[in-house]
Image (cartoon, rainbow, N blue to C red; front, side, top):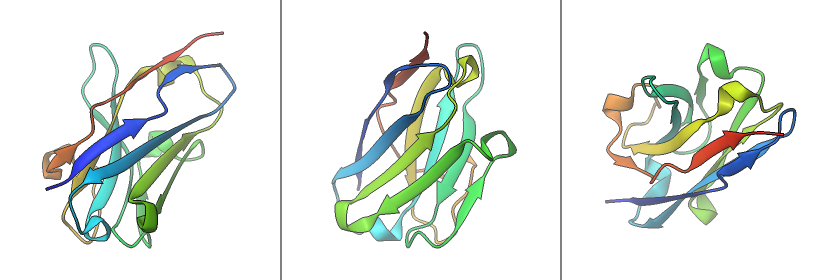
Length: 125
């Protein structure tokens, strides 16, 4: 069982960047879990953004995330990062990381077994 702890949420400036992290605070076998990033804006469904497989050799990006979002991981630190570049108002949401025990990652939230607490990201100048 993994306990995922997220950090890096808060206020983003338009045109700037944000870097969110997702760390497995407990549990083992982090490198056997694919990690995905999702977000949910008020009144909208949870949206899959990007995911990375356990060894970091395969990623999948939603069309909406291509170009501005980058996922990376360091299994020695049990951490996955999401960087958002050129932040805009559309990025205001609650961001969640999830873990699934599958070799290939997916943007289907239903496959994920463990979730981080979901920090809020707001965007304002």
